[in-house]
Image 1 (cartoon, helix red, strand yellow):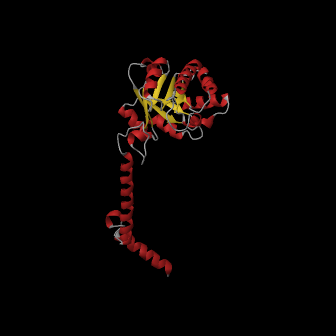
Image 2 (cartoon, one colour):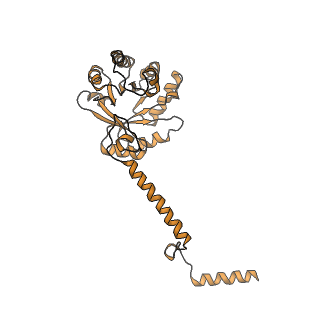
Image 3 (cartoon, one colour):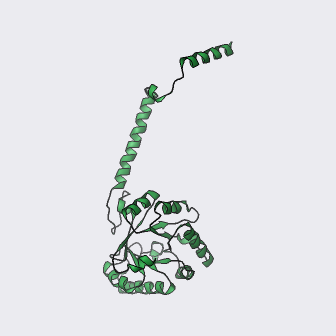
Length: 264
């Protein structure tokens, strides 16, 4: 946390959200500085595997909204995540009270403002937040509230870039921008960076590869290989002498003699 805070205003860091250990390992090897990791307390294996795959990368574990319904459950979930390897905690759906409880316990906690999917009904659905004066003022007030309750960072999702230019330098929070222009950290999901779906992709994203097409070609290759295998079996061209093991003629003859004597 200290190292990231010391870079505020100097240069942008990068962040992605990997969906597999392989993606996490690739992100670390490429030099991505920070990762968001989806954490499910009931099935923590994936988060643990991602932690092992990228042991030297700063990781924020993103909690599901329903993981905690009380302050006790908040702390229980957070400490379990930290023991698993989280460097920071975030839950976009948590109340400010829950964020404060975690922060006051000494945990590094991040907030989430702008287009928060779990709260989007209050801001008009899945669209940019902060295009009106009142919404822009609200964003500023939310940042200041997060500062006051002890958060150290905030994800700012899909707000106008020129509003972000005003807000980011005016908060002590480390701003992680997704679809919001330039912040302290620039954040895109691995799926969007890698082009790992058939789309459509979010407007704020950019695809640097076409992994989805590669996977489609791999699947086609699998199907063709299985078809060729079936064809060989039907034609009796598999198995062959090269793919089987033969016993010596002595063993074969002795076995036949043994069976013949047993049947008589």
